[in-house]
Image 1 (cartoon, helix red, strand yellow):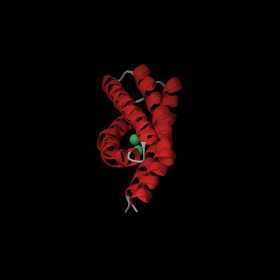
Image 2 (cartoon, rainbow, N blue to C red):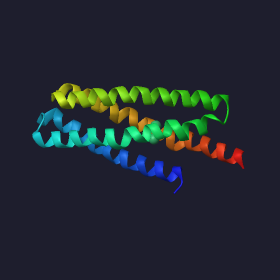
Image 3 (cartoon, rainbow, N blue to C red):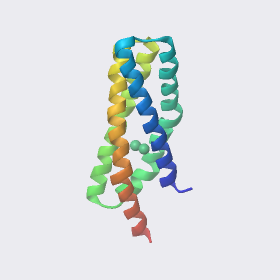
Length: 141
Ligand SMILES: [Fe+2]
Ligand SMILES: [Fe+2]
């Protein structure tokens, strides 16, 4: 299986989870924090640790250098993507700590940031980054 397929499958799974997380965050606005919600927030934290973190690292080591190799403009674009990873690592951390503290307001704050930024980030990977990697592959031929 090519990395493109693997990453695409990961992205699809994460987008599905983001919809779920967004719904749950909205529920907390009028229902407050329910014990059953914690199980799901904890589950999302586990997915971040076990799947999303390794996915980011793999991109930083494989896909991004390849995309950046296309040229100067591509390199600058990928620098921006790396900044987004750094920003998201911090937000993931804030969310995890908020869940540990059971702090509803912070869970919503970090949770909605994850939903918003990660969706935009994935969209860029599925369009611009994909295109750059295809360019890099074509250049190698
Ligand atoms: Fe990424
Ligand atoms: Fe990704």
